[in-house]
Length: 249
Image 1 (tube, rainbow, N blue to C red):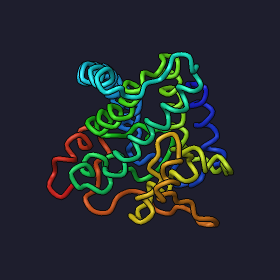
Image 2 (image 1 turned 45 degrees about the horizontal axis):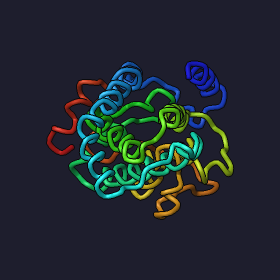
Image 3 (image 1 turned 90 degrees about the horizontal axis):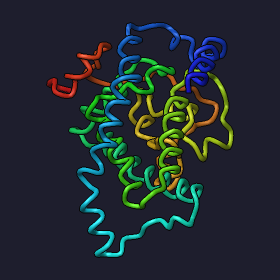
């Protein structure tokens, strides 16, 4: 992961998608703290909370109602593929509702308040939004009885793609745009225009956007301004922390 980050930082400055997004807007310190401290911490707390909150009810439901669970004979790859689709389904709807429900948008807007899209703001989330999305993302794996090896693969894959979808690198992903959530179409999710930003909700995969018709990747057109309309989000961590509770957020 460290190697990927180092390479991406260098390539951003050689082949930037937008030259203006290379300039420090006073957001680097906060983005660094959010990406490398707050998001990982919130995710870990969610991982610990899921078994405590859900383990016994789910175990009871599974045994009483015959809820579908993985067979350990299926192998890691099968566990990985099915669990990833399930995790992405949960995340897709949480993310989409986060854009459509004003209460949840107050928290999610912290991520979209960024004035540029680059490698370091991949983890810029309000701590409560980060916890909720991580909690819902990991939950299907517990329901399905996913193998530990597949869980590690999903968490690793999610971390890498979550970082890569924000890089400010001018490249064409080609057919991968119809499988993964790439930087090429994730930038549209950060567009200042709501009709463009209310699209491409996937985290790792873009499949559910294709299924539910929220996929957006116009040809021969570049993303212009990014951010949110209305109450601007602070560039410092404390301002972002209290943003959802401010009037007009």
